[in-house]
Image (cartoon, rainbow, N blue to C red; front, side, top):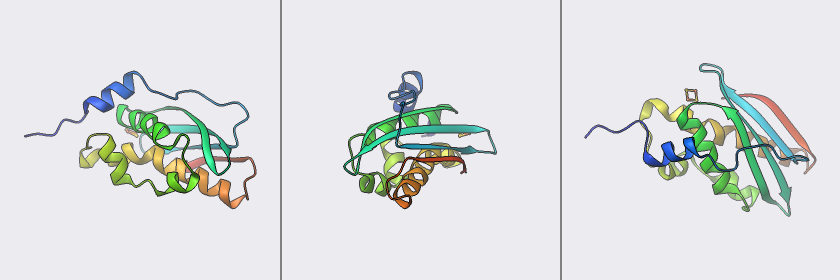
Length: 136
Ligand code: FES
């Protein structure tokens, strides 16, 4: 059977994304994109006690990247930075219900930007961190 490009989960999250927006006074801002298609994402996060207390995302992207970013915010909200950094591409793809090979980069755009932002935050020793122009 031919695999559908858009799973039901993707369509639902694309139409009704959760955690869309921008947090004022964020501890971490991470923005990046895929120059090939021009899609990009911007995360803002509040960090406390080593955990992502709150997270929102903005961006312009295809249905798969938008759905993946939205789902990712739910997967990391309230979780430790350590936990968020350990989320694998396979895990995210599984949660999305499976993605065809040619669209992997779309699905992983947000995860890669998020991880780079968290790594920069840890490197700074927990200071307010802004990382922009991450190329995925
Ligand atoms: Fe650019 Fe999907 S087409 S991230």
